[in-house]
Image (cartoon, rainbow over all chains, first blue to last red; front, side):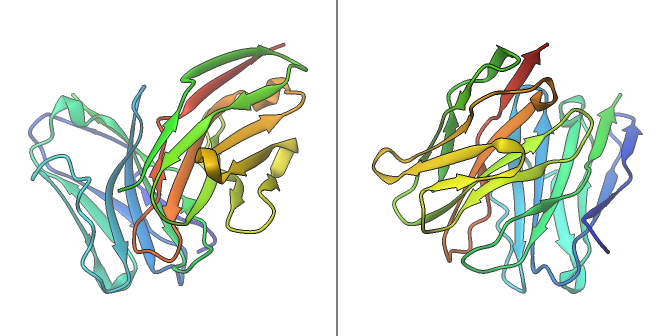
Length: 114
Length: 114
């Protein structure tokens, strides 16, 4: 596609339920990032995929969070047993890999845990 | 590990005022530097970037930034702001040629009063 596509754009879920957020990166981009944007907290790095390398999971806030990237393209971020503090906008970005590349962001998924 | 510090979390200016937003980074090697902007209700988009060469880079909408290596800084400037510049501004860094993803600052919320 022309840009990074994320779905759903909005998700309201009950506390304790699991949610899956999807990211479809720009075709050909081998690097994919997930970030979380909370009010007043800026952009929080969650996880980074680069090609076939093991992902950098250092930003995942707890073991309730996991992410997969199948076939080097689409990625799914899963949050199990959601808590109210998980409410945020979850952003996905993709880029080429190399010395001089920039990341392109999707519109994000606004997650509200009630 | 990389880190980025943005000194001003909230800035309020009048139209036609000059703008400078501070950004300092911490990393021992060579870096790529970015400023991203998020207008209200829109996704993050690239404002400008520095990879190499002239340390004074120009971006869209009259913005510019200067990379000062000795100060580990990449401050964003605009000589005369407009009401439409109201947005959230994020400074970001990543290691050149490395496998690390982007590291973002906390962001600066800029409000331009007409």
